[in-house]
Image (cartoon, rainbow, N blue to C red; front, side, top):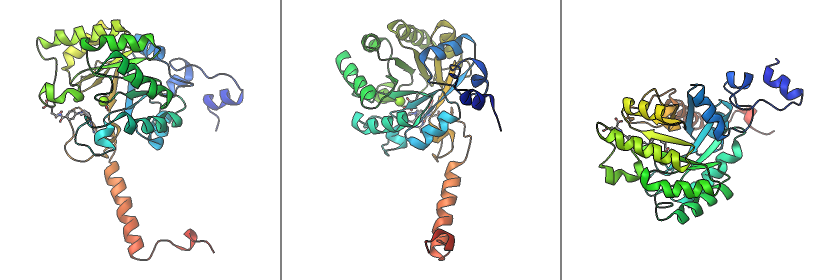
Length: 294
Ligand SMILES: Nc1nc(=O)c2c([nH]1)NC[C@@H]1CN(c3ccc(C(=O)N[C@@H](CCC(=O)O)C(=O)O)cc3)CN21
Ligand SMILES: CC(C)C(=O)C(=O)O
Ligand SMILES: [Mg+2]
């Protein structure tokens, strides 16, 4: 079977950049995704997907599935390390996950989420932490939570060569300040949210996540900004959509937030596999002769 993709590869030509040509139509970026490709997608009105990833196999699979941006979220706190919130996770815990993901992708832009306490103290702290994620973790960009109060941090990082993704609306690291998991930017607060988004853009952010924001407010902010907006519980009019991968694939059980759609039942598949393995071992059926060395 010969595809345009393999023809190009065998001819030894440079594949088309993400955002143009047959590679895009196939949903597969031809080479490294760059922040300007995301801006081009916004200009063309083409929505794009983002997922979290915390390890090699998921990073490889999502990269091959044509997900242009992977986020090593501080949500690893809940979804890898078993904490009840994202607050306790540390840079030292997240760094090896970032390394695993960046080693495993061929195309995706990998964003490292700065965890609570690793950037809020000063612009210097934000830069020191980001340099670790880029130097040791080989991340391509970082993400931090906060609006106008964090424009000095975004400016300092951008000036130092670190692409920054903002995150406004419901910001889980501020859970105790926001009074729990609640929608942000209803009514008059929509103006505050817009001011935060514009300030992040002016400070140099290349994109901004909006979490649990009313769809109308998110739509307006998306139209006002020239950088891409990435929604999670922010309606259909954002430039991109992000989900935590264990939510998207149905690995996490229990009641999911309203914004989650499950595209698979990985919990069912894995638990079925583990149960079948356990039964075969207990019945003496595994290993069979073909699994043994003779
Ligand atoms: N697995 C997972 N998925 C996520 O989306 C996620 C994490 N972990 N960890 C970090 C943060 C925390 N997030 C959360 C967690 C819970 C709700 C939640 O319970 N939402 C409810 C209540 C909303 C309301 O009361 O207005 C919902 O039904 O959406 C929302 C976002 C989003 N992030
Ligand atoms: C939900 C996304 C945006 C996030 O910040 C995370 O996974 O940590
Ligand atoms: Mg996060």
